[in-house]
Picture 1 (cartoon, rainbow, N blue to C red):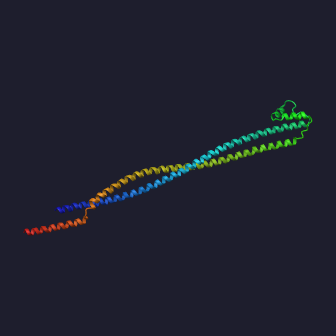
Picture 2 (cartoon, rainbow, N blue to C red; picture 1 turned 180 degrees about the horizontal axis):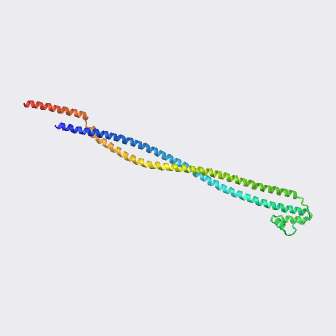
Picture 3 (cartoon, one colour; picture 1 turned 60 degrees about the horizontal axis):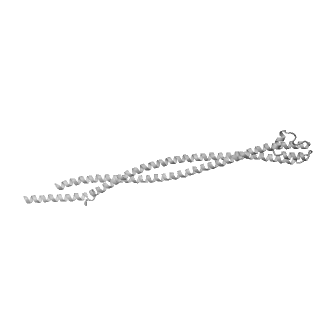
Length: 278
């Protein structure tokens, strides 16, 4: 009876061990797979985050470089515009001055050829001659000869025409250069602004993606920690089950066979004792 009770207990224990070992094995396999998958996903997201960080750095440097070039180009453009504006203004003023000087000299040579005094009276012509620095020269000519015929008129007038033409050309060329410089600057600014906008949009996109990666990493690492704890618990439980169910010395089948043999032997012994008693 005692052996039969032990057999029942052993059978129950064996059933428990089989169920628990199977369940534990399944749990260990599932948690091991989950741990491996989570670890692989963490490595993937970590690499992606690092790559995004590198790309963001490259794009940020490119944007900073473009803005530095824009600032430099703007500074140069302002300096060039100021120079051109001054040159054009000076060329215009010079043309007016040369035209006035030409008018004075034409009047001067016309009067000189007629024998009239160059500075007769105090009219506007005398004031213009004084402003242009010609008054002293005209005084000397008047003093030297009242019948001066103006023999140098052709050369002087030709020279003034060349000077006037040079200033007009300077104004035209500088105006054209200013327009070209402004157009070139505007084209550069438009293209670089578009490039900056594209890069900044890409930076925002990659930054958002990297933030999402970092958030996913935190969640994955937390999940990995919990899964690892569950796996460790399953491994600890397996160690206990192993001691209790697998390391008993004999297998369940061997124990059943041994016990059946012992029960059979006891039955035979009882029969022998019963016969002897009779």
